[in-house]
Amino acid sequence: MQLLAPLRQVAVAAMAAEDGGIIAFFKEMAGVGKAIVEAEKSDNQLVASLAAMNLDDHLPSDKGSSDRAQEIARALELVPPALELLRTKATEDDARAYGAWLVEIAVKISEAAKSGGVKISDNEQEFIDQLTEVVKG
Image 1 (tube, helix red, strand yellow):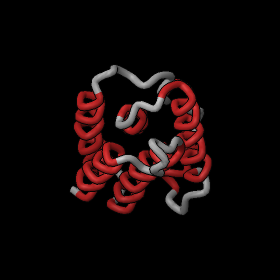
Image 2 (cartoon, helix red, strand yellow):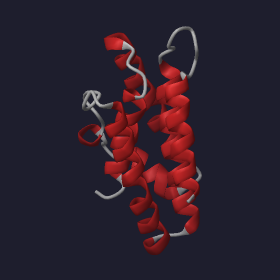
Image 3 (cartoon, helix red, strand yellow):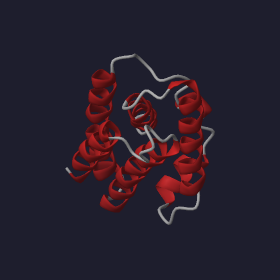
Image 4 (cartoon, one colour):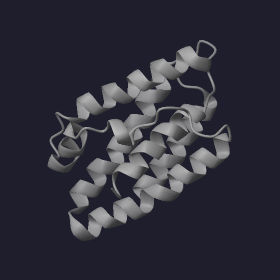
């Protein structure tokens, strides 16, 4: 689905932004789960519906490739077409809510595993900032 691939890649990119090892990976996966559960209560019907789907096949089971820059670039490449699809086939509100949800997923993942005692590392914040800019269009 054209809206689920960016969701998965944003999660992979957020996890790849800072390599914290296996324990961090599981904490980050919990962050994905938290973002999805919270989105099920979204005021936006599209986001709530996507979050309520069985997303198991669309979520990462690993951190993707070891190339952090490649994973981030791929995420930033997949988001604009999904937003454009929503703008043409749904509403601008749906596109804004979906984009905000993608950013929220990146934030929840980044906050889930502290790196060096810092809640969000510089690398993670850089990805969140880049994603926010892409979502703003």
